[in-house]
Length: 434
Image (spheres, rainbow, N blue to C red):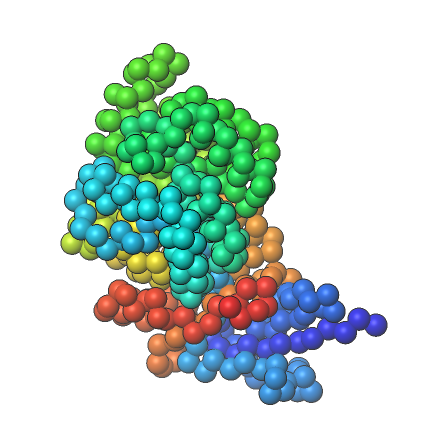
């Protein structure tokens, strides 16, 4: 008979189910069962007292991990971030397009060096694990080797794609259409469903390149990602630029341009999506495109964001459009999704949006992302039979009776935002402590 190993993790436990529901154990035990083949699954979660009675003969020094002041949550999903922009996340910001030209593009050009790219990949993805991010979608630079180094270092369900830049870009980063298509096809063949097709945005990627690669991504069932309607200036630039392309001259919106280029669909992720017209919302709904809200990146300048505006999640939800949260490193200044959750709640609270709760922010930073990526059957929450992928956070002192209160204390009371990076006690992926 095959032997199965039980492991027990004691802490307060939060298991998000949807925008309004989060299971909560003030003193719980997550029971992990590892098969003889080394596969770890969640067996059950129950109160500590019940676990003591049920597993009285199974507890031991080697298989009981107690985090008395800890809070266990699922691993975070960051659905929009640029690993190659880590060095510019705290640079001065004024407006999106100027910030790209002044800081972002020169920094990404440095990744032409294999030595530089390799060293930064090791450093960045180690940090990413240390803040508890185990899923999401990531942008690399135009360089094939930077993508390879990122893929070799990343842990978790994180898609990565090299950006395609064929026009309106600095010479150090601009590709020909042939080069960009070749790079995208290489990524799809080499990394299959770990790869995400990534035209940087409509300003930087010509429509022929987008359409050619999008058709191939659709054929292979590979995800696509880009940026949409982040600022009014960006939208104006896109609409003027695309008048030069006959097939796009009559396009009425930024969203329609992407639709004609084959970039929308059930496996499409569009970052930001702040300034959208009703017709665009209908198009996003009909194509089943998912959106990513990046509150820290779009926040006012005084909060170290780019001041782009605030995503209206209520309007998005009324249309039935799927969405999740992202840090947008380096438009966003901090890597931790706890900082993103705080910003989400605080910015929407200033607009009087009471639905922006901490429970909602946890769901949109975990299970919602897993659902969009189609991996929610095995990760994204702490349900029975799912993989043992979770994060242990430093819990606030005191006793709490409900998930909203403990999350408010856990996230909302931190005064120095950089401290969120140090709030993770442990990160577990597939039953292993990373």
